[in-house]
Each structure stands twice: as C-alpha cells, then as structure tokens.
Length: 123
Image (cartoon, rainbow, N blue to C red; front, side):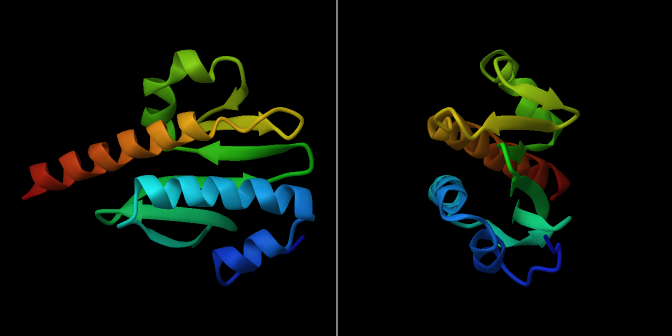
C-alpha cells in the first residue's frame, strides 16, 4: 500500500469496503466534534489540526484501526482505553469489535479544548 495520498478520500478508498465504512465513521466523528479542524495527510494517514497544532490521526490496518491522539488524549482517557492494545501515543481498535465512536468523539473534543487553551496562553 502506498503512503503517497493527496487527501483523505483517496486514503480511505485504498481500503477494502468493510474497512472504508469504519474509516468513514471515524472521520465523520472527528469532523462532528472538530468542525473547524483542518484535514490533511501526515505520516501517510489522515491528520487533523486545530489552532495550528496536531489534533488526532487515524489509520487503517488489516486487523485494526490505529487512533493517535497524542499522548495527552490517551492519558486523559487511559481507563477507557485500557481494554485496547496500545503503544506510545496510539491505540488499536480491532476490526472484529465495534469501534468506540463515542469515546473517539470525547477524545477529539478534549483535544480541541486542549489546543484552544494552549493557543490562548500564547496570546
């Protein structure tokens, strides 16, 4: 699979239909909670920014969807994320279980507030 995607639609369309559905749901959840976020591709995956700062990323894989909310997003929701396989700044949502869209939405909302707060402090 290539990592040279020009936009999120192109990225999502590179996956099998069953994974595309899940990626689209995650994208919609992010956009609903962060409508002002800019969307792009970074590190070969969908990336969102608010206030000029990274917000969240997600990526499709063969058996899971990776979600990256920088360390603070994972730390803040550590208890709820503890049931999922994790790495430094990442969590893996297995494809054979429901994707926790409500949790993703709450993480995104937290990260938006965090970026907004940091932006205000710099002014």
